[in-house]
Image (tube, rainbow, N blue to C red):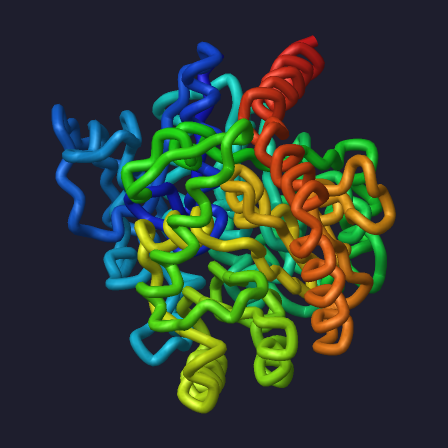
Amino acid sequence: MRVLFATAEFAPLARVGGLGAAAAGYVAELRRQGVEVQVALPDYGGHELTGETVRTLEVPGWAGPAKARSGVPAGSNAGSITLIEVPGIRRSHPYLQPDGNGWLDNDQRFFAFSAAVGALAELDRPDILHLNDWHTSTTLAHLATPPPTVLTIHTLGYQGQADPRWVQAFGHRREQFLFGGACNPLVGGVRGADLVISVSPHYTEEITTDEGGFGVAQVLRDKRDRLVGILNGIDPDEWDPGNDSHLDVSYGPSDLSPKLTLRTRLLAEAGLTDGGGPVMVMVTRLVHQKGVDLIVPIVRYLDSFGARMVVLGSGEHHLVDALTKCAHENPDLLSFVNGYDEGLAHRMFGGADMLVMPSRFEPCGLAQMQAMRYGTLPLVTDVGGLHDTVIDIDTFPTAGTGVVIPEPTSIALLDGMHRMNRAFNQPRRRAAMRRRGMQSDWSWTQPTQRHIQWYQRLVTSLSD
């Protein structure tokens, strides 16, 4: 089976949030399971390809000139990839200007990229066309007879709305992309795809409700017979405390004592003293969705139970400023690192006792699975993929893997911290929670098998 997989992010070449890691992990597992995958990624620039071949793609005048460079990225384990260049696609960041605002021509850039993906699909006719989020959804507007098409929604909140005049540039199914008086590429993709996948079962339920549907719930309800939720996975080789080059010591579920060493080193690296309570971490994008703002009002209470917190992330300027100020005012309690450092993220999961993840919505979430692999207990809100992956210790004492709070508020978060602290202070309970999380299978193996089953079903049903 041959799959053309189009995405705006693909780690490590282009990674902003969970999409890049999820795309790379999924494709790697597809290939392990014998599926031939052609990855189409915007050519943001700066990547040399080994064994490179170059082809010109026939696209509408407004979208060109377009070309596809195919090969293996030098110094990367990403495998073979096709980088697509269209006007304006090469930028220092896939989506954002240096001031944190989106590039003003993001619609033009990704609509042109999608037109080029359509041209690539015509040249290398795949058995399955797999699109991801709004950045690739208008590919369907450039194919007279698309192959069986899957669209994965990683985050419904980003739909790529644009001026309605854009639909006049689309050659096929243009009416599907009109919604609410605007050009809505994600809605058009949902309407046109043969199967729509969201990245966790609970998130699939949420996005079909008026409360969680970001204005397009009815469009998704209309697709319910072809809408499924499949949980993302993580790479168990990349996230393995027993063999992690970023850690000074290794450990596993049978012996967690090395975490104490890593905990001490993390506190030293963060410039914090040990308060005797749990060391808490956040590894996150700094956006409203992630609930980062909820920790600022309660940091001053951490010392009441000896807790310390380390935050790593980048994003919206007002959140960066708020965390910077909070760390300055509470230097003994909070350490904030602005940016993303892969090695530090691993060291934080290895040395922490608790991951704090108070998301307002979370389609799947990867950090909670990564943290559990390292025996770091997750404190999460009861949303999306967090609902599907974390079991509350107080509700299910013999099966719990973390603490689940009912709502994204500072009060609920502080209560959750106190509940987690009680578990932290009971060594047997703490060790049991850690072992359960570490022994859970968060790999891509089973999710990918489900995807392949759907691929085969689509190929069979649409060829009859």
